[in-house]
Image 1 (spheres, one colour):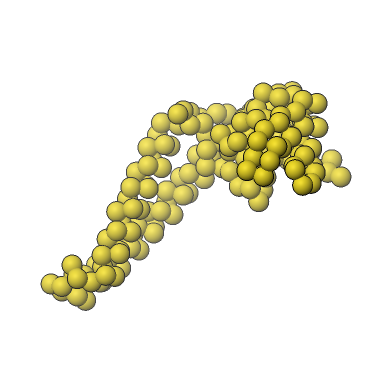
Image 2 (tube, one colour):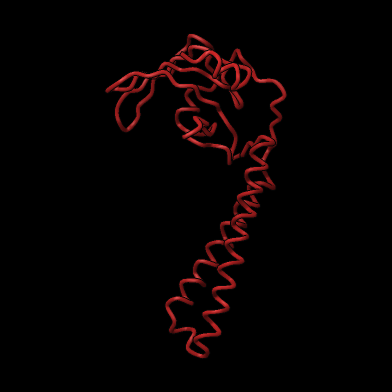
Length: 168
């Protein structure tokens, strides 16, 4: 699968890699201490063995993220499309769930940028996939674990300031 990232996504992914490398450095330091303390019996030390497993997992994760970043397609968002939902779009939706209704504003973002607390949806998430390609007034209806859900596009914005200024 081709992964798309924005300049913000590249920065966030690079920060994530640096954080993982920092964690790896700490684990290696702890592993060296554990090895020194247990001498020849390191293979019987559960703490040392856990640190060794953690080190392998972190190494693997760092390699995976670096590989994704290296092969990612960078998407520039000079100007947001306010006609059709796509990567970078900020949309106000009327959401009809089986038990309630609400209005939400979402931004469709690239890999590494999703943040549900900030209403940033990864373009490959189920909701974003159903919104991409729609225009104002159109709706997407799809099944969720909670039942049938309908999202109707009410408005699209060129930036978050505009979206926040028009909030009800």
